[in-house]
Image (tube, rainbow, N blue to C red; front, side, top):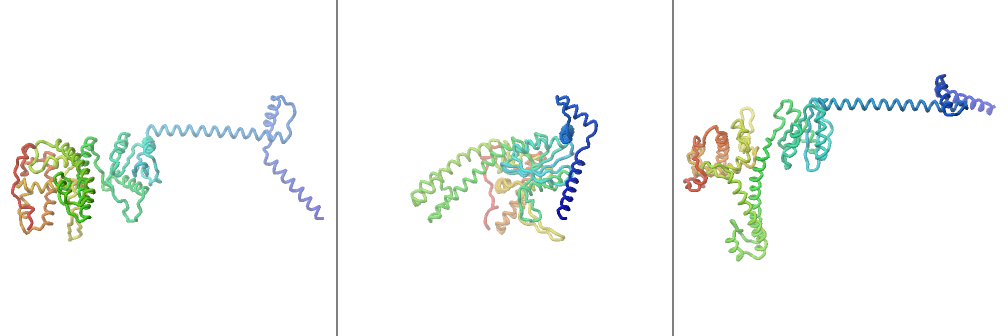
Length: 455
């Protein structure tokens, strides 16, 4: 009984499978039968097709039709893409693209903003690859804006981007971690640069501080004076290192111990180990002095003929090379801010507190200006700034810290006055400054002064 029931069940299953296979196979229409049979006769075979052969041949033809349709769709897609790229190349599909670039020696990390959209994920490029990618962005948008932080790589990338037609901004470096998350990565910096660039383009000029890019000639002249400054610092470092070696062995040497006359006397008094340690440093300092003298003469040779007494050819030329263009400043506040000699301030409501100088701006100007003002206090007693502060400087009760603060204030004022002179807003004589030619300045006598005497 069970055996018969099982056989019936199996027969029923086979019938269902056969019916399903027949339904899955495409119906053999008369045109298909005629087409397949005509192909068989054309090939030289007069035997009729069986049902299985007919279904296989029909499936093959259907597959060929599907493949032909897929090829046609692919060609249409390619044609549409080529037409889109041509339209993009002609006018651009986006209005503006903004790129924040975190620059490194061997890689650039870039974040892109398209029109008013959100920042896209950061991308990393090698420098040659990045330039090709920027060229593609120029075809995709009407305008392309970029920005990166000023640093040791100079302005070469800026000039390349500007030459390609990109509007680039070199911005002042800053800590982009505004909320103090203590997380600093290249991706975060590039993202913040892109976001602040978007604000700057939309009218927020406080989004970041744009660094003025000098001309190649101005940059080269400034590099020479800065190299001279580095030579000077290196000389001072080696001299201090020699004094440290001597102090370690209980010897105390002062002044320019590397000079030939001083060195001959010191070798007879110092221990052999100290002489052995100082000899290489002395040779290095002697070589640096030669290069330092050459650079100094080169910088001084470019100074103007007429200069105020006490200003000095070297000081005048360093000021001009660091500023590069005095006409860049629109008012005296910008000049004072660029020197970094303005006092810091913490004020709220009726309370006002001014602290030490903020040290913003060009750090190389501050020591030059302060040194210059000490000289002007001696050689320019009729200068209006000197006349204003001279009574307090000459007062023996004025403390040394107070004198230093006064000199800093005078240096800030002199920077503004010199800006007025260099931009022809006034003449040096109108400010009380005596002006003489370079050849005559050496014959001037030092006026009596009590500014720097201790109380």
